[in-house]
Image (cartoon, rainbow over all chains, first blue to last red; front, side, top):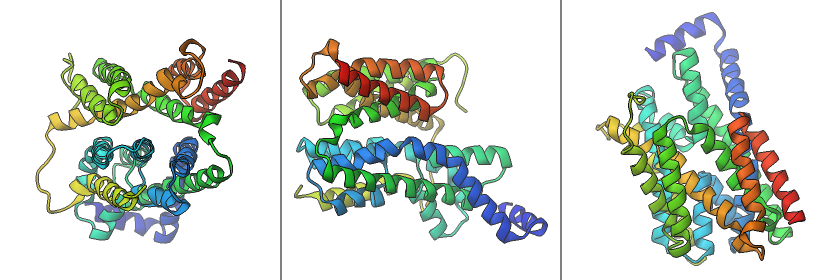
Amino acid sequence: MLNQTDVDCNLVTSPVTSDVKTINRAAMDIMPLALATVPWGILCGSLAINIGLTAIQAQLMSLLVFAGAAQLASITIMGAAGAISSIFSSTFVISSRHLLYSAVFREHVRQRSFLVRCCIAFFLTDEMFAVTCAYIQKHKTFSALYAISAGITFYVVWNASTFAGIVAGQYIPNLESLGLEFAIAATFIAIVIPSIKDKSILIAVIVSGLSALVLSIYIPDSALIIATIGGMLAGYFTPIKEQHYG
Amino acid sequence: MDNFWLVLGGMTCITFSCRYLFLSRIVSFELSARIKRALSFTAPAVLTAMWMPIVFLGHQSSEVGFLNSPFLYAGLLTVLLSLKIKNTLAVVSIGMCTFAILSFIL
């Protein structure tokens, strides 16, 4: 069905111009979201240098792992000389939301080639998921080209801001004393607060936040993962009156 | 960091697997509605578990007391702003400027 739509499109406009349009649209749509994560990328780069990673190691984190929250959490744990098992377990818990995203894309992508599916998976982020879902809603069809273009745009901005952080981190020691650490808090607040749309999300947020506060005093290594799971369970078991989730 | 390459390799595998799992043709099971609902709480829960300690315990990294902490006041202001303003970039920018000014004054 998707292929049929592609063919129809190509009959009307030349395939090359319509592809260029799709790529431009994807880049324009994701750009504001990408720019909002620039302070966060700078912080990832500079903190990695501060805890003793080399420039190449710091850049490889953004090039290969490409997951802001997981990178920051792991850098914090590495800086505190925490255990590898707690790095891996918090990476898994933080990344588990991507299971949901890949489950949503599944029906659209399953017939595509291995390479296309690998690209979509590699470039899958919260932001790419958000703009691609908006595209699907608007055009009633999934576009792998759109999804991958949006993903690559975000990837370039993320890695450029990490690079800026690495450079800054080498010349300005204790960059975090300038308040970049607060930039993470501000970014996350700006993402989370507007997403609180019903009571169950509110309860998940409160439980996770309060338990993170208490636990980070006593068991800093595993505070993040326990607080997150606690928040998820609290949200899940909050009774809902109407069925919001279909 | 002695084990850096192990950490990097492990993290790359974990993040890629979570993103790829349901796009693979080998995996045939579907996520149930219940699991999807549980996973929908991950993003707000994990992000809050990261910002709350910065806002309320951030003062511990410097010499200031809790009631003089720029993290506290700038954080609470950012929460209020994010309720009023839709633009993420504007909220983050105003929050950071407030933090910079407060750390200078307090």
